[in-house]
Length: 209
Image (cartoon, rainbow, N blue to C red; front, side, top):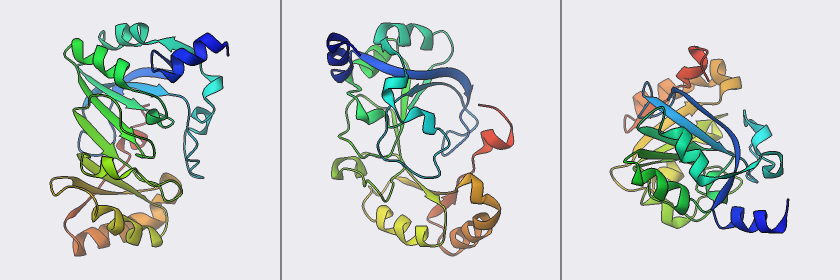
């Protein structure tokens, strides 16, 4: 990547765009909502069960001008979801500012592993053990979504729940490849601990992006 372009990416004036698409939000509080997804490349959190590992290497995805990303987004929906990869790898200020100028609702799906930048209407915090969130984002998260791969993850979920604000909605979501094994445990756990809710990847059941 040319030095000049890399500087623009580092400043958040361009972003490594992996893909963008209009679909139905499949997870968490806004499941069932039509939304335009902007998937940004780049992530070093490295979850072994990640279903978009092709997003990890930012160099594989073309640096794209923010104005072009915004121009595409406004054609489809008033709800925009920024995801990755790990979108907070990059400065989200310019992207979210331009989206806000268009009057759009802006959501982010993030591990919280990097400093929070940007203007957000909804923050979905999905923390990972290998690279924990920054302290700042816990108090700003609107929903906490913990992925359950095995029974040890319930303890991790409680540790993370103790750090978020009192209005944050708490979700436990089965890791897709382990869903048949862990979903019964999640259901049982939520019934015993009703502050939690069950989140499913409904888009996968519906066979949509």
